[in-house]
Structure formats: structure tokens, C-alpha cells
Amino acid sequence: MSMFYYFKPLYHSFEEAGMWAILTVVVAFEFTVGGTIAKGLNRGAATLVAAGLGVGAEYLGNACGNKGELIILGALVFLLASVATFTRFVPRVKRRYDYGVTIFILTFTLVAVSGARASQIWKMAYERLTTILIGGATCMVISLCIYPVWAGRDLHNLIATNIGKLATFLEGVGGQFCNSSADGEDKSYLQSHKTVLNSKANEEILVST
Image 1 (cartoon, rainbow, N blue to C red):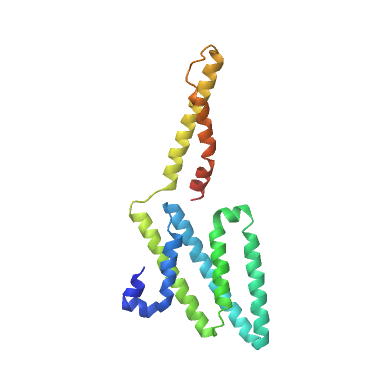
Image 2: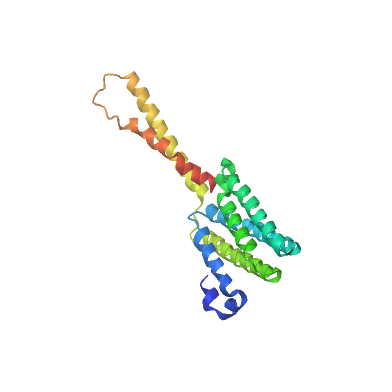
């Protein structure tokens, strides 16, 4: 992504907006393929919606005059940012779309309060969206083509391992009740269920990606 600055044709096409492509790669690239795709889609969709609303808010503000513009933009920023912020408290939204909602708030606020003219707003929104899409697509291609890590496979292996540990635990407990005189027997199996319980967070992360 640094080629946006070192390759002149790219730099002249996007100029400083190329920084958004670099930032997208930094924040959207994940260890698993699913995580990278989810973050990339969240960022792209949130930027598209927020940029569109930001442009619309700027046009509406300009139509209301100088004084009306401040009131309209201030009200819209407060309203949409508040709704988006409290939406993050919904468990389902927070689990899957928290990153996208955060990007929506950031992008809409930057576009709406930039103070640029309507023509500049269109250029800003276009450049930001284009560079983010390029950065997100780069992350997805790399994660899919270069040693891809699939969360589904890791989840399958983790669940299989946990089932084996539970089987060992249950077998050991059953044997202990049937043969209560074996005091010197190895009882390390009694700790195996704890690792299964402690792996719940990892399973949830793998499921979400």
C-alpha cells in the first residue's frame, strides 16, 4: 500500500487520500480469512453508507444558509452518532458489527464537519471510499492466497479435542466410582474439564470469524 506514495501515477490519482488504504490494511488484516473478510466488508459498507449520508448532510446544510447549516449539521452529527453509539450496546450488533459501526461514526463525522464545499465533499468521499476498497481487497487477496488460515478448521479441531477431553474426564470419574479403592491412581483427568470450560472464549471468537 505504500506504493500509493512511491508510485507517481497512483499518488497523483489519490494524493494524501492514499493514507486510508494503508490504514485499512493495518486495521483490517486479521489472522484468519474469515476475520479479514468480515472486517473488510464492515469497513467498506460503513464507509459507503457514512460517506453518502455525510454528502447528503452537507448539501442539506448548504441549502439552509450559513446559520441553518450549523444547526442542521450539528443536529445530524449528534443524532446519528448517538444512535450508532448506543446501537453498539446491542449484543448481536456488538459481536458482529461493532467495528463497522465505529467506522461509520468516524467517517460520517469527518465528512460532515470537514467544512469543505459540496464539490470537495464529493471528491473527499470518492477518494476515501476508493482507497479503503483497494486496501480491503488487498487484505482479502493476501489472506486467501498466501497460507490461508480458516477459522472453521481450527474450530473443528478445537471441538474435537474438547470432546476427547470430556470423554477422558467422564471415563475417569466413572472408573473412580466403580473402583473406589484405587487411591494411588493418577487423577489428572479431573482437571481436563477445566481446559474445556476455559476454551469457550476461543470457540466464540472462531465462530464469529
